[in-house]
Length: 397
Image (cartoon, rainbow, N blue to C red; front, side, top):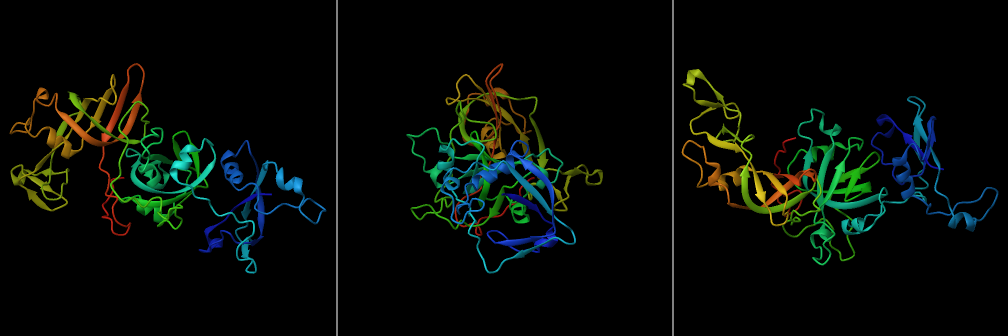
C-alpha cells in the first residue's frame, strides 16, 4: 500500500529521509486518493511499480509467484498528515537504505523524446540554456508558470538523418511545482544551469514539471555509457531552424529578408550612455538635460534605443507571415545606413535587407485565417566552462 505524508518543516528539521526506513507516529488520514481524482499522484506511483521486492500473499511464508509477476496497479493511496504536536518520524538506523527504495533512473533527452509514453514520469539531467517567465505577471516568481529551454549532448549531437528530434526541448514548470530556494535564486540569473529534473511528466513535444516534480541544481553525477556527462556541452548550442513544425514556447534560429515594418509599435527612447538605464528624467533646472537616477549624473550624450518589429520573408517558412521583435544590436545593424541624424528613418530604406541568423523565442503560431509566426529575438548566454566560472548577470523577471 502506498501513502503520501504531508509534514511540517519543523518535523523534518533538515533531515534527509529519502531511501530511509522510518517509523511514523501521530499520523492521521486526510484523504483516500483514487486514480481518477489524483492522476498526478498515481503517475508517480506507477513509476515505482512493481516493487523491487516480491510481495507476500497473506498467510504465506515465501513470496507468491503469481503476485510477483501479475501485480495490478494500485487503485488507491492514503494521504496522511502528521499531528502538529504528536506527529514525528523516527529513522530506523539499523536499516540505513530501505530494500524498497528505488532511486530515480535518469535518461537522456533523446531517449525520452523517442519514448511515446505520454503522461508518464521521467528523470533527466539537462542544461537550461534559456528561461521565459511570464513577464507581465505580478505574481512572485514561485507562483508563475516558467518555460525552460533545455538540451543535452544527445540532442546537440543529433544525426541529421533523424530530423524528427529537436535540438532543444521545452520544459514547462507549472506553479504547482514547488521550487527550492537554490533553484529560485538560479532562475534570477541569466546564465546556463545544469539541473536534475526528477519525476517530470512527458507531454507531446515537451516535458511538464508538476506537483511532486523535484528540480535539483547540481553538477551531474551520473554519466552516459561513454563516460561523458549528458549536459556537459563542449561547444556553442545550435538551434533548429524555423520551419512548419516549430512549436510555440520553443526557440529557433531564423534568417530572412525584411518585407515590412510594424510602424504602429515602433518607438524610441533615450538611455544612459554609461549604464544603459532607459528611464531618464528631464529636469527644468538643468535646461532640459537628461538625468540618470542609477548613475546620479547628468547624461549629456544619451544613447537612442528603439523598439522595432519587422516582417520577414523566410525561405524556411514560405507563405507564412513571420514577425520578429529585434534586439538593439540587430536594430542598429539594420539601420546603420538608413537612419537620419535626428534618429528617424524611411521604412523603404530597410526593405529588402537580409537579417540573420537570429536566435528567437517563439511567442505565437497561428494557422487560421492566415499562417503567422510571432518571434522575439533573444540572446543565449555562453555555455562554455563550468557552472561556477560562468558570468552571472541579472535576469529581468
